[in-house]
Image (cartoon, rainbow, N blue to C red; front, top):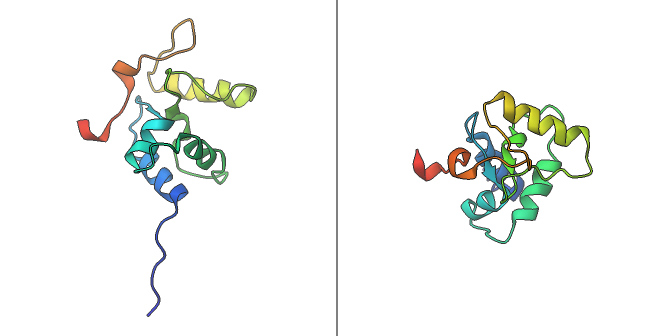
Length: 110
C-alpha cells in the first residue's frame, strides 16, 4: 500500500489562503504564524509568487504587515491586487494602506 505524501509548505499556504473570505485580508507573517513557521513570511510570498497560472488561490488577499501591497516594482500586478481587493470592498487610504484592524481575517474569529 502506497502512503500519501505530506503536504508541502506551499500546499499548506495555498490551503490556508483559500479560506480567507472575500473582503478580508491576511498578512504574510500571519499566514506563516498560523502554519507554525513564524519566521517564514518571505516563504509565504515565494509560495504565492509560484502559484500555477490557473490557480484558485486568492493570492491578492495577502498583504504586508503595514496593510499595503508588497508587489513594488511589479507594476500591473500590484495594480491588479489593489483593484481586486477594492472590488471586494477593501478600501485603501491615501498612503496605499488598508485598515488591518477592520479588514484582517483571523480564522480564530470564525
